[in-house]
Length: 252
Length: 251
Image (cartoon, rainbow over all chains, first blue to last red; front, top):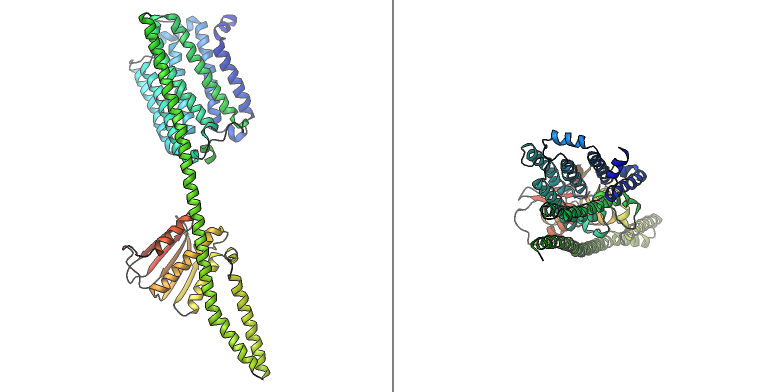
């Protein structure tokens, strides 16, 4: 594996995500015990760690073609054994979406958490049934599941914003000083733009392969910025002048 | 410009449009938040000023009640004692003079007791149980009706504003019972249930049809006052069956 693997693995995106994970771990370890046990802080670290893991698996699959071919064949894809899309679908589109829904759930007022509690199993079950029935196989592009993931994140963000303008505790706070506000805003932007970008890219791929490949950088830049926000969540207790405590957590 | 370029521009435009919509959404949310925050603050200020106004009214009413009580005491009690002392001092008998001194000492003690009631400092030093007990003793002393107090616990360490409101509401409830119900007995119970700490004021007087809207604002004011301190006021009554008032204390 050595140099070929590292050549495949190391690019600006994976290096950035790795650095962000290291910073995240460092500051997470410096958090007080009580905050370490709080899902608002360990969930971002989990998402960061998960991103690094699946990026490494992706790089390994690109390095070990035989293994990738076998994995694709196992999933029923013998036509395009060089595709890595199944990993992207399962990790980035499905598991990461569920993890982000859990993160949004942390920011919501108690009365609105139930909507996310319904959305998570619904998303899981619909995705699973679409894949098992072969409507959207795991090894091909999954437009419906992608749209559902983006919409659920948008609904979650919408619930947060509704809470922000109706909940008395949020009304007493300054939204621009809340880490939950910035994280939700970033998720709202990145998920919808990544979604529109992924839809457009499939179309553009047919017209110009070069432009489509360049468009993938948009995903990467957004991916880095979302992960940067996750690190800022972990960092937020160390920046009391910049960020206020989240009112929902104050309530707890 | 070829068709491919056109399509790419359409995609770029659509993306920018979507981004614009989301930016507008987030910015409007922040603006709505600010607007509601201002409204909320105004509402809170209004509630606070109403609360202060209610407390001030209550303080005035308690002072008024105290002054009436002092006036009555001066006329009926201290005035009588001083007249009696004057009569005794007018006598040449030494035992009468001594009796006069004793009466004078009693009058001085009564005046001291009354002077303490002139400001509201007594509110802080007295517990609600003590206050109720004093009020019931006073009613009983007049021979108006029998009274009793049963308390499961002592209501101490209440904030001054809550105490003021409770004192006034209890005072007014007892006044109403005496004025309008002509009861044979007034019972007060202090207890705790699932709703929290409660004070039950019960009389076996004439009662009234509680379902009919009252023309006066007395009951409404008592209810409103209990609500200003986060408590509750509940009245049940029926003609010939007496009246029950339940005051729920704030948590």
